[in-house]
Length: 203
Image (cartoon, rainbow, N blue to C red; front, side):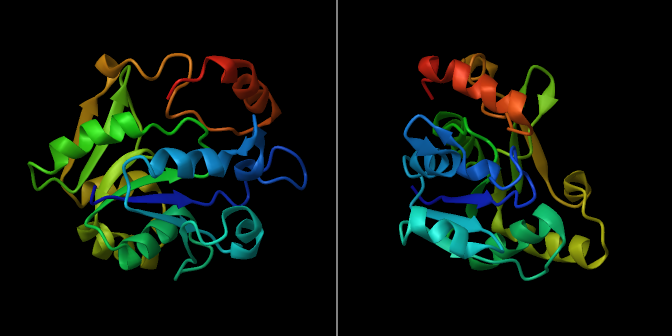
């Protein structure tokens, strides 16, 4: 499938003082290894955007592409800009590295819609909430992200004012109840929740 999976490193997100959320173990894999596994189900390219590549090389090796930001210190929009610049495909599935339940099934469903339109961003909607992290973005968003970063407009919602956009309700896929694709590990309590539901994880 002509799709690039992109993981934006949440470099400052730590559950413990020294442990990046992306490197927390769930079962026998880290969060980021789980993400790569899901992405490789449907992506012919997977990219990690990080300013600390050496942290990940012992775990990921050369199994995926690892790139760094062009604009340092500008948050996830900077990481998206780097991915848009270097991805080989026109469609990019973008997540952050603290999301343990990213789901290929949802993306496959949304990609079918995107491939029939000229829409630049398609994002899943779940129970009335929009989830831009776990959306599909067109590479044509490159110039918009460059403009936003250079103007210090770093909030992700700003991008929606400048591109074509569609929200797709994915509740009928029934993949977001016990293991919500949009869930992010932000503290120790979140991590414990993930460990509790791991036995029932199906996506």
